[in-house]
Length: 312
Image (cartoon, rainbow, N blue to C red; front, side, top):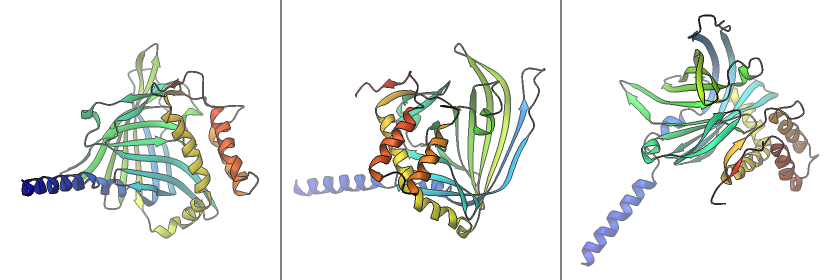
């Protein structure tokens, strides 16, 4: 009996050890980190409306971006993107969080509103969720998918609803939902972010397709020294932005829906936060006061239609 019990205990310990290991596809997420030369291309391709006037193609090339892992565990990787304009000009860019087998998701509804949704096991088991956050660390979109390796190719794919991208929300208002299919493909020189997007008009509970769009964003790996200035910038500013993330995390933990305003007094949220970051770095705001100042700025942008989580 003692021998049987010992074997059962050993088997249980082995099972626990295996379950605690990082997923076998975690190295794919790791490959999204590093210093990259980036190029973005977008082109509208098809509209069901024969009178629709296609917008000009967009191409942005030659930029350098650091995708910096700022939090890493076996089943979660937080990647902060930093644009390298010059050695003395670094811009905090968007952030992405990869979580393995995440059972809940914040789904975009339109009109700057997100609702927390509990997923069924088949929707998240064996899958990685990519969560994309704005420059201000406010939400954009989330989606889950498996990393697939087939015929020598490795890729992750998901379709999610999102607000208008920054490249468009300031110049057009003829649609209000971007239904985006994102495909990330790892290659020898970095990775490709391919998009098959639908620009949707959502009104009275119905969706109407305005136009489809193709996006092709390439990330070509560079020597890390090309992004050395971005790492220095982050070391100087990571405490402040960590506090911003904590403010958002506390809010999402206690609510099941959120509505955000686009502008307050003519400014978007990241303008308020960048000014606070500048003052904090210059010592004009005391460490004891910065959390409250961040909360005040964020709360200005929270609308009236958010819902407190039921278990709070």
